[in-house]
Image 1 (spheres, rainbow, N blue to C red):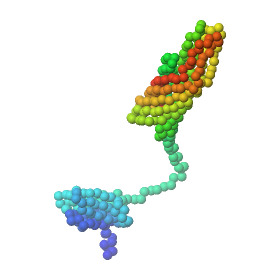
Image 2 (tube, helix red, strand yellow; image 1 turned 180 degrees about the vertical axis):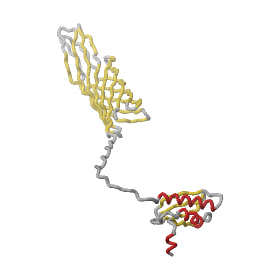
Image 3 (cartoon, rainbow, N blue to C red; image 1 turned 45 degrees about the horizontal axis):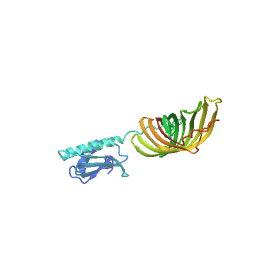
Image 4 (cartoon, helix red, strand yellow; image 1 turned 90 degrees about the vertical axis):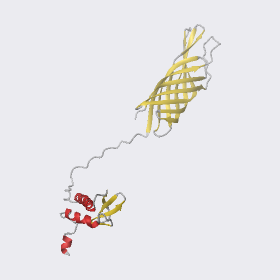
Length: 287
């Protein structure tokens, strides 16, 4: 009894397979594990499968340590040898001297800071526009900043609109005038397909009407607050990285029906209360 315990194999092979049997595998395996300590006995179970023999190695608590399916060999003895060699290889990976573990007195490593992506998206845009109203065509430039949650369709927007001066001949001189505006509003993305996005927008235009006289006896410059509302649609195409192009069509309605006045002239032109803008330009969305 004592001799049997001394030569006990660290792996018990079990199973109901017939080719090879558990006993055939044990005959080949035991000599291979003769020098392996049996401090923690393991069990190798043979399971018959349609495509071969499945072998699973478990520890004494039942936890699976390794698993493999062996294709059938030309003879049962040959297959028993192949299975035994693999089990011995598994066992070799679980034996050896315990690693030398030391406690270092040095300061603990400083964890790297994890920078999460910003939850806010900022878009900078600049472009030129052509404007049409009752007095004809004009042009200008615009610059805008939009900001909104990264995953939201909504964004807030502020834009500056600088228009070219228009001229109306009156008597011996001219009236040079323009509307400048600061637009505050929002955009809502209604469609997106690949690099193309389409958004609808609305703004409150805080306009300033600037008019100057040229060629009169006394030339003066006047300023007047001129509010309005704007609405339109914007199409954007992302070119590469953070750069894109946009085309925007907007309509503007000015609340006050402004009129130019020159001393001594009664037939003065009425300023247009409606404008149509077509804007195109570039936009940049920094990360």
